[in-house]
Image (cartoon, rainbow, N blue to C red; front, side):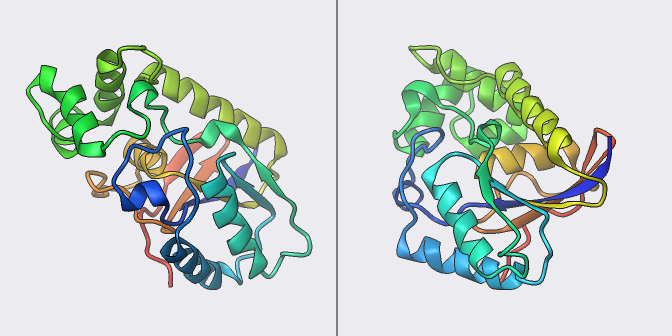
Length: 219
């Protein structure tokens, strides 16, 4: 086991982000604004000597990672790779639906009517469970399924990371928000999701996670 840092970056803004649609395992490309904010993050991180560069296997995450690496001091030593376990939460039937409508359907049986209300009253894990309950196909991930996937991702990182490594990992809004809520060092405001291309830095020390910072705006 070892101690290493993970620089979680949320991908740049996408088409579905622009139109406020549910974007879990479905994928849309970065918008022009999404590219610009990723470029700002790249400049802010350019002097961080990353040892490993990863993203989830979605186009939006891979594109953001590529933009960041183009400016990095270690760009000639790094090979970008994917780690599918750090995808966004899977929303099943609700993929691509208007976000407000989807969360209304998920929360209404529990007398809450939006994602912020669900999060504030019941917590992020409950939001995952409510989504699966409301999904006619029951394919959406509940909290148990979601965290089992994430834990496999950390197991993969443990196999490739060396002591002292700095890992760039481009992931997704609700995933980073969930990690921050579960492993926060202090009382971060995790009722608000991370902004596009923001930084949340985690230390993993012999299998113990601590989110040191959350939703830092870069650039």
